[in-house]
Every structure is written in C-alpha cells, then in structure tokens.
Length: 147
Image 1 (cartoon, rainbow, N blue to C red):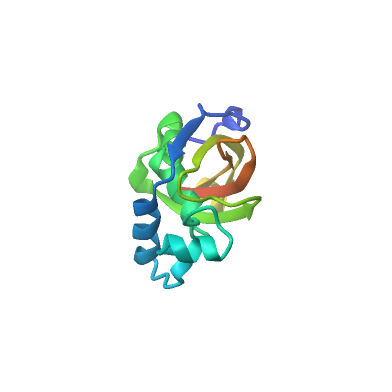
Image 2: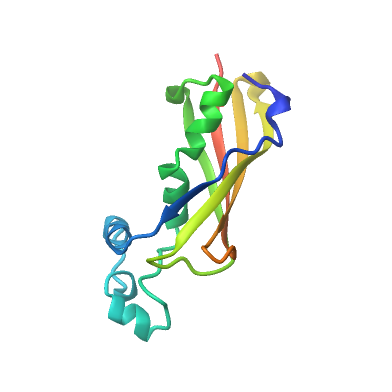
C-alpha cells in the first residue's frame, strides 16, 4: 500500500457551480441559523454577492468531485479500511452562490505509524473561482488501517 512514488501526484482538475439551494440545504444540515446563509437579501445586506458558503462547505466540493476516493482507488485501498482523519481550511476569498469553483488535488505526503499498521495520506487542494482567484486551500488526511 505505501508507495512514496505517489507523493507529488496531481489529479485532473474539477469544477462545480455553487447553487443557492445546495448552500441552503448544507446550512440547514449543519444547524446554521444565521440568515446570511439562508436568505439572499440578508446576505446582500451583509455585503455578500449572493448566499455565502458556510465555512466547512468547501470539503463537500472535493467530496462531490470524488477526490478522496481517487487517491484510495489509485493506491488499491479498500474504502472500508479508511477514515477521514483530519481536515483544515485556509480561506483566501468568498465562495458564493453562482460561483464556479475549480480545484486540483495533490498528494503531498504519505507516512506510516504503529509499525506500518496505519498509513496516513495527506492531500492538498486549492480551490479557485471563475476569475481564477484562490478562495480556499484544503488539507486533508486520510488514515488507512493496513493488514
């Protein structure tokens, strides 16, 4: 499973249009009650172009583009042996309804712990908007149980 030659591998880019209904559904699912995430008028009054994406929404963009699973498939890893170990976000701009967000995932590190019983795969994905402006950098760690 551990193959250091995968470090540095970049995957094909992906893109997704951000829809108002999807943002509202996500906001409700996480229990967000701030009207800027649910009411476009409130969002505009607050200075947004449209409904803004809640802070953890960028990970759903990568998930919908199947990004974490591409890595597992590449390495021949059974998904049932993996967990999402860590997630961080570095926000660089706004993501709002109507934006077209693009990204490209890269494997930046792989290492083992517990004598090889656990494999850690670290990826980074920069998300940009339709103006090619960076809006969010994702750093994801997938943990795989070897054996």
